[in-house]
Amino acid sequence: MALEVTEIASLVITILFGVLLALFVVQTIKRKRSALALVVSLFFGLFAGITAIFQSGKLIPISGDLSDILMSLQLNLYGVQFFFFYIFLECLISKDLNIKRFAVVFGLLLMQTFSLWLIVAFKSYDPGVNFQLWLFADLGYTLSGLFVYLLFGLPIYLKTYFYTRERKPMIFSFAMMLVGCGFILSLFSDYYDYIGSYPEWASTLDPLTNIVFVIGLLIFTITYLSDINYIYRLPNDIFMLMVLTKAGIPLYSVKLKSRKKVDIEGDLLSGMLSAINNVFEAIFQSEATIRSISSENVHLLMEPGEEIVSAVITDKPSFFLVQSLKRYTKEFETLFLQELKDKNRDIAIYRGASEIIKPIFPFLIIDKESI
Image (tube, helix red, strand yellow):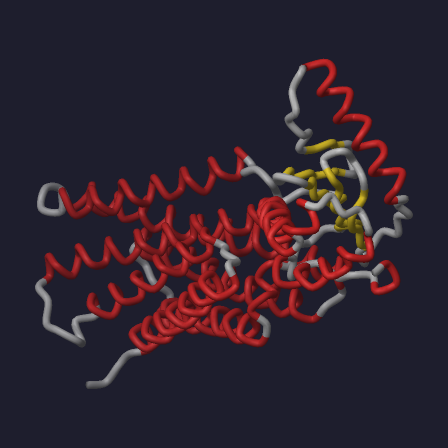
């Protein structure tokens, strides 16, 4: 049973999605660290690849109608995969979704979804309408992939490289660029399909598109395999992590390596936080802790626990940073449960809190001189 280039590409893509999915599921279970949007994206990518393999008809013979249904399902699953990968990228750079970007990606997914299933539903009615629906379905698929990988994903990894000067973001950028080029080739292929006239060279577009996709995804996978924690690398500065009592007494603080050099006085900062919380409690008769203080370039994020308040100072908050801060607060209270109950304020006792930073904040680089 000889396989064509497209079928080999589908098989390789399916295997790569499966490997990545398995890795991140293990990461979630073992290290209690999850990137749900990425896991969901990989799940849909895996099943899109499996659908493509069945749709080829090489495993089991299938009828023309079933082949069309599987083709629509395959493209729709890939479209959902692009959508959730976009959500993951948003989580890297922001605490909240950007409404305009979300509207673009979600709108393209809806256009693709409705077009694909209208094709299945009304295939036998009007070939002309069917042809137009395929145009909208292909545009929804190709433009969403182009937007997510090339126009959104590539700048994020380039920014991470210019921030960290590490090699991995540049490799990811190259992978994103390859996948984006694959969608550009796919766009040309859709255009020639639409006008119904293929130049001689255009016959190579589909195989070349699949080859570029495979190479890009392979680079992505191999790079993550070398360091699975690198998924959480954030393209922004985080200056300091600290832990205070509810009364504002500092228990632990650590300065972090950052691109911008900022001198932060921990005692001064803890006093300010205590004063602000006391003012709010007095005015509003509430013990609720302030969650964030923001200016244009500096953001202070706080997460209250039963006995403590954890805080980070960053130039830009993100979803992963907020989630990690929540987990750190819980882990700190678990690690020093007895000391906190005994109201022990000896900061030397809490130095062991440095040991739980790396598993929870894999994107932080501790300034050793501050420990």
